[in-house]
Image (cartoon, rainbow, N blue to C red):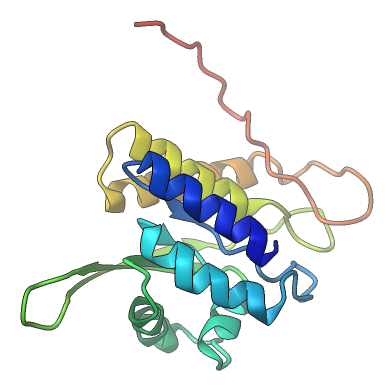
Length: 201
């Protein structure tokens, strides 16, 4: 990422005005290393947040964005509100990095009302954590999830249903890769666990 790349993406979104935009910040690597500069982060927040239908940070990214460590379920809602104050229309807080027997995510939808506080709808998504044969867990879940949300939105699903459908897809893709070992690092996501024939209309 760089401020220049962020500007190019923002210009394209403004030009083509897509019906929806799913923004996965991709600011922090699985190792915990930062992938962008503070200047780039400012550009993402200032130019892309207002254009996105939903922002999908993990806990590391969320912590960097709001400037305080987020490591508890009780912090999810307030953290999402903090991102909303920065321009995010809706927020999916991904809690997969949290040390818990369950995978705990929270979708926070905001509805702007004239001359009043924004209405908030909260959806809690909790699933049992999947334990794989890979020592370092599974890699690629976040980008798969954001892509799946975009696919469900493209199929006409409302946001809540799109997020839930995407969550189910990723969960099954992780489950289908439990026994897969490729190398000694992070394990894969089995995107093709249930191939289907394409139907032309």
